[in-house]
Image 1 (tube, rainbow, N blue to C red):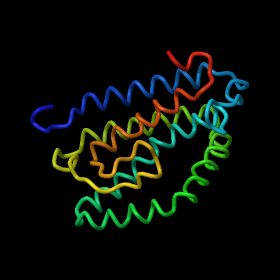
Image 2: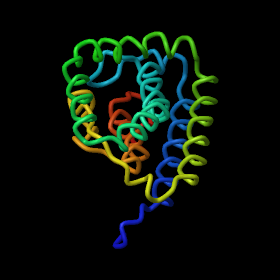
Image 3: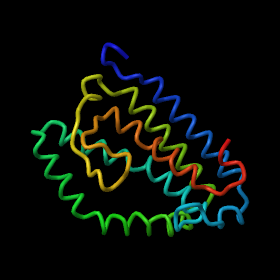
Image 4: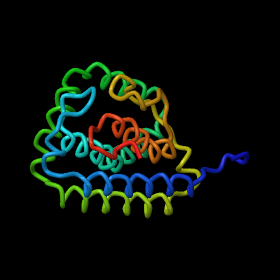
Length: 179
């Protein structure tokens, strides 16, 4: 948009597309499908679906961090992001192990319910954001995720989980995951 305003409707549409896709994938998969290996990861389809859900769950704490660091001098978030980048190895281990148990603990029904709750929360939160807050920015640990940019705004954070979701969707080995 020319005036610098964030296209909230586009973000809402991305969130709804992800919700619809998540439910189609989850509801259309058999238990055997969910136990199948994925392409390019060490996870099963069920574990990768949990990881995709977790990308949306993380937005709440990431927004809280950005609201703090976005009001501090940029050097503060640069140092913080540098520290997180230095801790990439432990992060990668936790990032891998979390879905191993998360998918099993939540199960199919609760993953679907939680996905709906998280998306509903993000819709409400996005609608409540002041335009000025959407422009708050901080540095991010670019080694943690290929979709983290060096500097991200609150508006960028609302788009991040769907970028993450779309990337991992292509790794699922469910029969209709590319529709």
